[in-house]
Length: 168
Image 1 (spheres, rainbow, N blue to C red):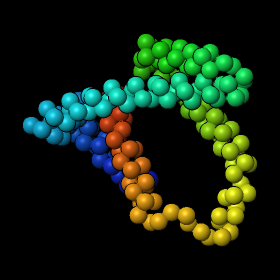
Image 2: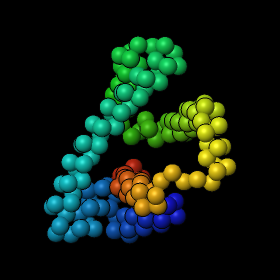
Image 3: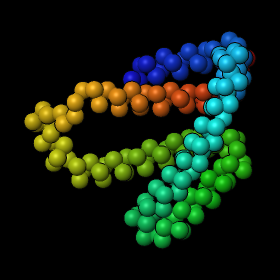
Image 4: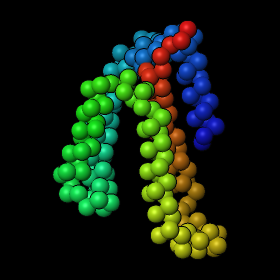
């Protein structure tokens, strides 16, 4: 999965470099040619829907996490996350680029915290499943889930084109 995603990412970035398409709209217009009227506009609709979905997921997840970790009410935790999202939207990509290292560090620390806490609770059941060498899912549904995940990752590859500033 990672190798396939890496190859596709390389091809998208190389295509963008060669054809000088440094935003997703010109990338899609270039790749799809005459059919770009459909695909470029479809991508715009998908971006709007995905943005709304991601914002609502951030709101709900952060509210619940801050409630569990700090005892904050759901509205306060969600409000804090909406303030952070709004500031990032207002000040744009410059803030994200400037604070990318800090954001990456905080995300990794948060994932480690959640992973370590979750691993402790799930370890007995996971150890039993591994020792029994049992797979509780058929191969076809597992493959479909894996394929869905790969397609999800690949659907956002054009975002890398939009955030990379051309250096040539």
